Length: 171
Image 1 (cartoon, helix red, strand yellow):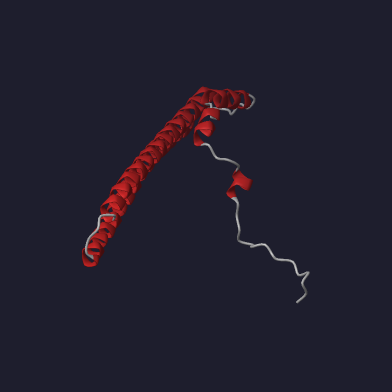
Image 2 (spheres, helix red, strand yellow):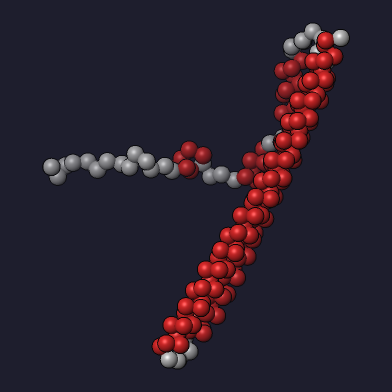
């Protein structure tokens, strides 16, 4: 091999910021304006007339869909914020506990007692970390379930609306 051999880049490397940029969910939600979207949809839909279909019913249904989507996004965002807040609280608490632990370990004592004390500290720390992980997972799961349920309920309602309109055309 020659000294001029080029190093190959890792083909599996992925920099999400180059694809997605800096992701800010609050900014994203701020840019989502259901009223503007409905205005654009209404304008586009008004150009098309479908015989036997009341355009106002279709527009009202789409408005409900957007409202459900906005509500689901709001619930999901609030859930993310709650998880982030709790993570910050956990980190702060962990730092305080770590300081107290270092203070306790700095006291002179027998080596066997120190090993036993350290073993207990590690055991407690692992149990607390697992408990915190569970708590955060449950918080995120609850938020996701609420957002999902909002979308599921609206989807079901939307299909019922479509069915009712189709059956009206039959008469």
